[in-house]
Amino acid sequence: MPSPLFPDPDRLLPADPGTRSIARALYAGVQDLPIVSPHGHTDPAWFATDAPWTNPAELLLAPDHYLFRMLYSQGVSLEALGVASRKGPSKADPRAAWRLFADHYYLFRGTPSRMWLDHVFADVFGIDVALEAATADLYFDAITEKLATPAFRPRALFDRFNIELLATTEGAHEELNHHAAIRRSGWSGRVVTTYRPDAVIDPEHEEFAAALSRFGDLTGEDVMRWSGYMAAHRKRRADFRAAGATATDHGHPTALTADLPQAEKEALFARIVGDSWSPDDAELFRAQMLTEMAALSIEDGMVMQIHPGALRNHNRWLHGAYGRDKGADVPSRTDYVRALKPLLDRFGNEPSLSIILFTLDESAYARELAPLAGHYPCLKLGPAWWFHDSPEGMRRFREMTTETAGFYNSVGFNDDTRAFLSIPARHDVARRVDCAFLARLVAEHRLGEDDAHEVARDLTYGLVRRAYRLDGAKAEAAA
Image (cartoon, rainbow, N blue to C red; front, side, top):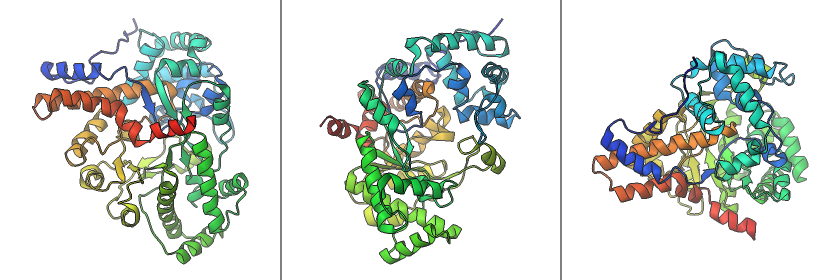
């Protein structure tokens, strides 16, 4: 007999009955608040076309590097899972890929992915038996049948999930046709973009030359000259703001910043575009461009997100065969105190600048990030991110940052996902973990219960709206 699938209503709440009772009351006050998802990587084409997904492998498996990262570690090939390679789409049969996934689902025991997926299976699709080899076809058929109905199209699910705002992420060299189509459609769902210029800033990015050329084509600027290059950034940022963007996103290898004199900036840029640069030049250029992006954020009001510390594409063969974002990125140690100082020396006290810092190096939370955000007006702490988007990671984040930076120098939660159906599950986990943390403070008489209810609402809804300047952007769009 297959195992039942009934996610416990008290999951992630404290084991102690008294503290759990407090957490239940806090959670009841926030569980139905709208979802604000200001940082993610879902495909805007889903909402532009509202076309149905065809099967669970296409929807749940192929886009989610959290899943095939684990499977690949156990010797399962990406081709067999239906993941596209540089040669083109996978030839794997979707049902066979789903069976392979179900046969290895035990690998996810105790992981956030298992919790998210069980939430999706039970709450979204109404399935009441666990996924395993024996139930693979039952799942495949039940989900495929529901995906063919209007209630499971992207826009219908967006409304069902009570999503107030969803931000996607596009490159500075990419067109925003899908966002334009969403606006033309008259649909009321609020899907905005985010400005991600990494491909035209990082000379070590494999698409740098092609992206830079496209960047110039889209803007009509001579991007091989420093002045034209910076003018192109201004134009593209304006295009993104017109598509609803309130934020930029910078995924550099390190948090290094620089503030070079004008002549040195131009000489460095000439080496970069002249293809005569060294690895040290590439790092210095990325560092200078973080400071330049901060200057542009002061001009146009866009919130700046910096999330360094991932050694991207660590598996050289996998990157060559399948490209980026295939689960082979690995965290590395990251310095913030010294790395950010050139930018902060110039802009750290600017009240109009807002920078959200993320990390994959948890040792930096208490030592560097919380003290920085607890002092500089322009800095806020992004939530536990990527490898730490887990109950334990969220708890560690609160424990290591609250005593120094408080709650109000953080920005709530964002899911950073490509897997659309996991969004409500991920936000639910964050709400439960925050309520559990607050309940402990109440139980230890460190926080009043009324204050805890207010903080819970802010962590769930208020802080993210303020941090990403969503109210002002909505008013601007209406005007």
